[in-house]
Image 1 (spheres, rainbow, N blue to C red):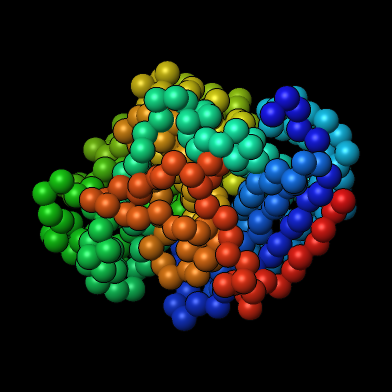
Image 2: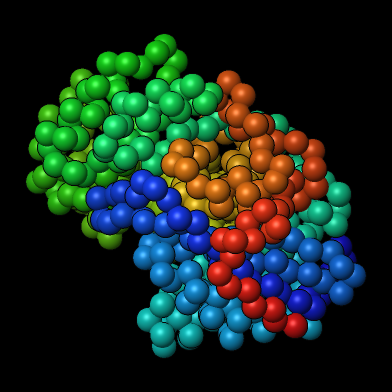
Length: 380
């Protein structure tokens, strides 16, 4: 495409009821919500993006109002040279809105969703998979791990994930010492050769608690310990915890801005860096951060726990990075994962396979999820 000239933006909210809440140390998700963005240019080319809205999930409709009233109108009937130029313009033009509203996160998430949709549209128009647009040497499959494993019945969930083809597993912790340690030991005892096991505390501990826990976790075969401290704790605390721990630390999903990631990379405590493409940065900025991570000799492992469009965007970014990172795949039941990304990729030998379809290679089956659509607005 010589330039991008958008004539229409559609925004959707979907909600799916679930029988078992998805729990984390900070709270529970009692249904699943997804915000999608569809952009279309004057020639009918289109692309899909996703906006982070996990917590609190009543914020999904609020993000669509941001898109409808302020952000999407900024790209209608306006030409951009590339998705990157649109991202830069939207980020700059929404800066004061983010300050005035006190909602920099929501604004960044909406910009990220638009950016993903623009990249999908450009790759579709060129007839190539997004990962190959980003890197000619992109991988054709990315190793994945089963995420979102709740503390209740954790070992049984791992067994089901293993039967579904996963070879790597991440447990939610931060629910009390005895419960956490019991789950970790039970899962560790059942690991097969070559399987990897990670844990995520979801910012649950202060430094003394985290230091005590890593001491009690000693000897467990953990690939990483994720977000044991709140993301805004000073680097000195993170370094102190890293020095006290035999485990690698992971984090980064709750950062915004390339400078924040540069500081994280340079701080030296984080081995596995986890930007979320739908939470900040979209494809434009996350690909730059992925390069930064690789240049520092660290591992890029995209964070993701929502719908199918964002998952595929994460997969294409990871494939284009061509490193040894793992793709996070929520193992909890969620029809908005498969239903919003058809044809859904196959998991083979623990890796998500990506085909040669253009763009993200998937699109929502709107008819199949019609009963879960709760909101739709058109901006033109």
